[in-house]
Length: 280
Image (cartoon, rainbow, N blue to C red):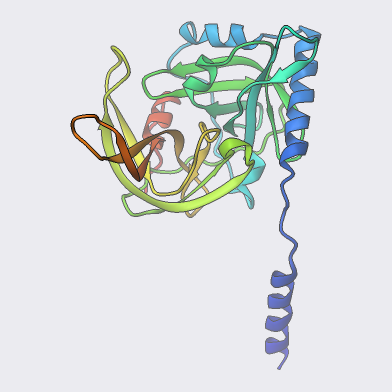
């Protein structure tokens, strides 16, 4: 009887738990205000300077990466990343495009895509957590254009990092936490669908990519792909849309058939950290 009562109380408690409600407008205001203050202070690098630094930083980070414990909520390690710019018509700092990033170490190291920094322009860059707190980006410490990875540092030593996992097998369950089109802290779920070799841009070499079935969209770049244990096994990078062509002659796009989601596999991130991926 006592066991049955305890089970009922536990179930009732779980059902009555209030879900976290994300206020997108409030987070937008927080990151714009926070990074704008950094830009006005002019006491750190601008987005232009951070972007330019990509060509000078090493391709491998040689510092210590302590193992991280599993987080109860991966949202605590995921951040918005953006920059601010002046429009020339007023004296206010405007928010640029937003992307995603995640914490690698407690003392300020974070990870996102190389293209997030390559496309950044304007004043200061920063990140914003679910709690609305912003942190200034102070340097890029390693960059890999081929595999689309950038490791950078923010001015805090109070992050909650995500643990690094092993390469996931095809068919493994995965979860993505990212910010598609400013719908912040969206969780999507799916599986690893395949690994494939993708030709590199311009004169860059080909790289190995991981495709997944979990949805994401613009603004998700840099979001972590997690396994069922909450470990990072990849990172959002790009999408490719497949259309049914209505005519081979005019190449008009017919109905959208499928969106392929290309992600950086954890093996590429681990190599950039100077170590082998964790064993299965």
